[in-house]
Length: 218
Image 1: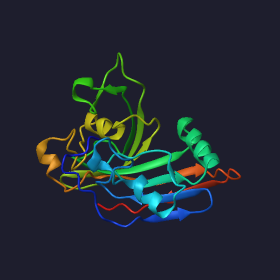
Image 2 (image 1 turned 90 degrees about the vertical axis):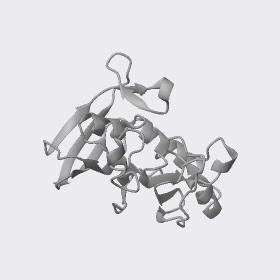
Image 3 (image 1 turned 30 degrees about the vertical axis):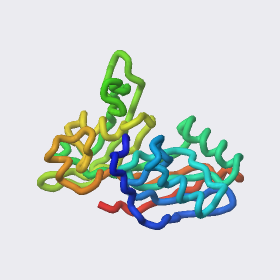
Image 4 (image 1 turned 90 degrees about the horizontal axis):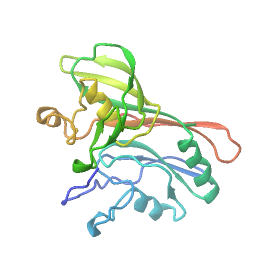
């Protein structure tokens, strides 16, 4: 996501979920860049704050600025390579939660819609059956009320903005999404209601399966 010119990241202290000799797992707040932007005023980010705590910490994967939740960092080269390959080869398990507009018709399903960058309007993405890259998201509806539905989202692929565009295509734009949602849905919440709540990987030292969870803040 392109940061605003008046980028003012939250001042929340670094929230550590887990740490050992190889990994640092943190809970990123909404509104904070994962890595620094190109402009001078975009230096403050999760990576910078993590390095203030542990100089060896290196980002392995990213969340959009307005998405909150679990980010795992490596503390050495072996861990960085090992976890990075797991993301690349889809050997991780990820669950996001979203609060979206409208009442979902089905309790669960699979969204299988190819995505590509909308180059004149980048970084926006769009569905393109001819030139798009394969993208799949499995979903489960957790609850419904008069205006919204709460989803658990299980991304099979990891395309840019995949969860936002897939839910939009399903007819359920995410509350607070200032890229894809109609204005009244953007105004329905003071943040993007998308949170990376669960991540499971193989530990780089020994291969044991380990998982991390983060409470949903909306």
